Image (cartoon, rainbow, N blue to C red):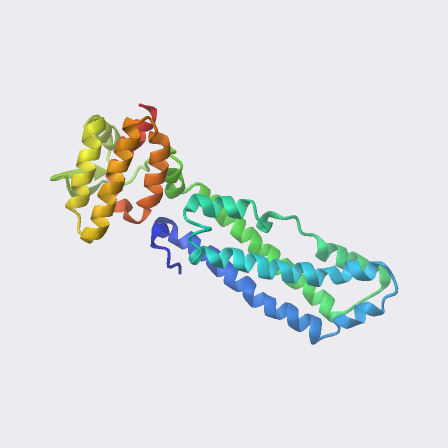
Length: 265
């Protein structure tokens, strides 16, 4: 489970990444035991340059466990490195998570070549494969996050409204807003001109049940977004706004179609 309330819309997938990181950290202990408590040291009896290529399984395997565990677990607390979902995805995409890994294959082939059958090496190869599976699960999760509404919101991308039953949200500008109903997106856009959307968004925030301090902050962010729109910097302001208000999407969501429409205005 994640402590990041700003990532609530994708909490289940962020929690998965953190859980994978914790599992990798547990495997680091296994690497230490296999190297120091079993027959791994016998590999150094091999009088061949291949000795170091086989032993490389330990260094790469443990580095993988330590590096990826810290990379994934820190999503939960390192806000400076991971301020938004977009930054999380960018950092993971450019990390060792996506490195090619084949030292377990090399180790097995060279052991067979020299007639070596060491329990520790065999277990290290299996452990390495388990870590590759965990890394693949993390990469699959990243691909899911790339398709999430939160990622699209942060990057000013259009959100495809699913064909769901009607959901009515009350208390937005003293009216009811129906989401997922036929024509709901078009109605929202048609009923908001450039000035009204900001005005009604502020009213919705003020009439919500969130603490006053948080409401005041949201209102200030809406005002900043409106100024960005007036100054011709709306696209940049929109991305900043969505990143800042991610934890209050239930309030903002009915206005997203109108706000997104302004990107092409």
